[in-house]
Image (tube, rainbow, N blue to C red; front, side, top):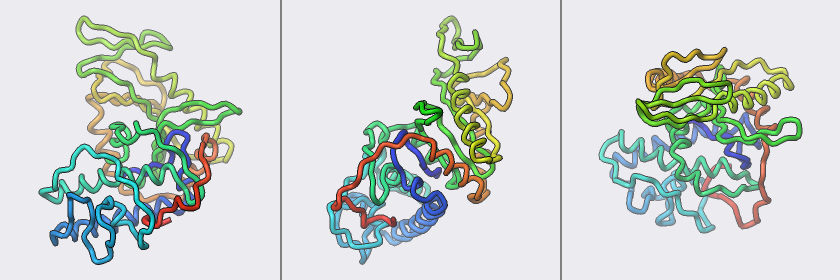
Length: 305
C-alpha cells in the first residue's frame, strides 16, 4: 500500500518527520493486519459495527481501523470512517485483506491532512477518488505518493502531475483519460488525436504537464544537490499507443504495457532508502501547504502520533 505523503496542498504527518512516519506506517500496517487476521480467524470481528471485539476495546461502533490502531483510551467522540464501496462480510483471507486495505484509506487520508498541531480540510471528492485508491492499494508500502500536489516554483504556484517516489527512482505520472479501443496519435506539440474507428477527438498533449512537472522536480533536485533518477509516464490503460515514438526517458503505458508496468511495481521488494526519503523531503518543502491550527479538543488518542 503506497504511502500518501502529499495530497493537493494539505499538510501531512510526513511534513513533520519524513524519516519517522514512512517506517512507522509500515510497522503499524503489518502489526494490525496480523491483529485483524487473528481476530477474524477467532471469529471476534464484528463487521456490522466495524469494531474489533477485544478486551481493550471499550467503545462500541468505532471504525475498526481506529479500534486496531488505538493505543490509549478514547475519550473524545470519534469520526465515522469514510464510506466504502464494499461492506460485505469477508468470506476468505483474500477478501479480508481487501477489506483491511479499504479500511486503511480513511486512516491514510487522516495522516495526509493532519499533524499534531495543524489540520487541512479534506475535499469530500478524495474519499471517493478511484484513481487515488488505485495508487494507494496497488503499490508496495515503500512507494511514496504525491497526489495532485501544488508546486511552488519561482514564487509561482503550479498544479503538477502525480509523483511516485520509489526506493531507487521516481516517476512523474500523468493520466490520459481514454475509452476502450481508442488509439493515440500525435498531431502537434500541443495536441494529440484519439481515434476509434471513424470517431476522432482532440485532447491536449499530456507531455505539456509532464514537462512542467519535470521542471519542478529537476529544479528541486539541483537545489539540494540530489542525484536521484526519474522518468516520465503517460498512463492510460484503455488506450493503444501503437506507432508512437516515446521521447527520452518517457514511457507510454497503455493497454499492452499496463500489466507488465504494474507487475514490476508490485514485485518491488527493496526497503525504504535514505536518498529516497531525502528526495521526498526536499520535494515537500517546495509544495504549497494550507492548514490551520487545531483546537485543543481536536486530538487523536486513537492513533500513534
